[in-house]
Amino acid sequence: MTFSQTPCSKAAERVSVDSGAPATATSKDCKHAGHFSDAVARLMQVGMEKSDVLDEFGGAEKFSRDSMRLVNYVYQFKSTKSITPERIATLTSTQCETGTLGDVSCAALPEKYTRAGGGCSKSFSPNSAAPQAFDFSAQNKVRAKKDREKHEFIAEQGRKMAEQREHERKVSECRAEFQSRIDHIQGQMRMGSDPSRHRVELQRLERKMSECR
Image (cartoon, rainbow, N blue to C red):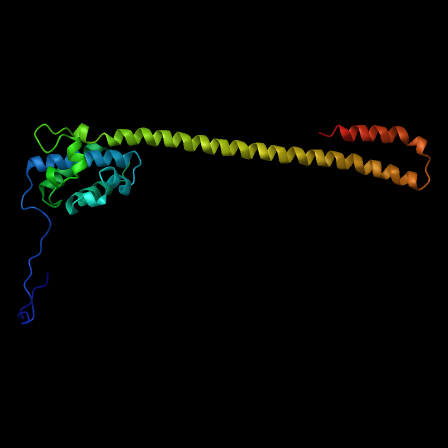
């Protein structure tokens, strides 16, 4: 906002700016906002990304501007590991009472959430409205277990391959050692050395080389 002692030009146009926040927020509205933020916070704390939370409640297009603002408010606590969903819900309710969250009444929340809780009535059940947190937590544990088993399998395969390569290296060195001695004796025989005096040693070396496994 700018204040000036100079009048606006004739081309200036008067516009009304909508802050997006209702004039007042009832305690009932803030109670619903708190319940919804609790559900979102539980999803967040079991590892769900914000985009996945939006999908869980019907997709981003099902969120009003203010209910999206509410999700963003919750996700600012993502890196605060010590804070509980209950505490986030309390902070949401307090923030709601100031009117800065906009329209976060039950009717403004995603329909999938409100419908699961029985609709915007006195019998609305927050626990029924947000079972996704428990489902996702279980799915997340199953997925983590499968990932862990996959990594362990890959590590075991790598260990076996390394052992196989080490074994092949030792066998190759063993055979090379005996082959070198055999080649030396055969070289002496080609130079005229009596074969009969080397026959027993050659047989012994060839037998030892065959044992390199």
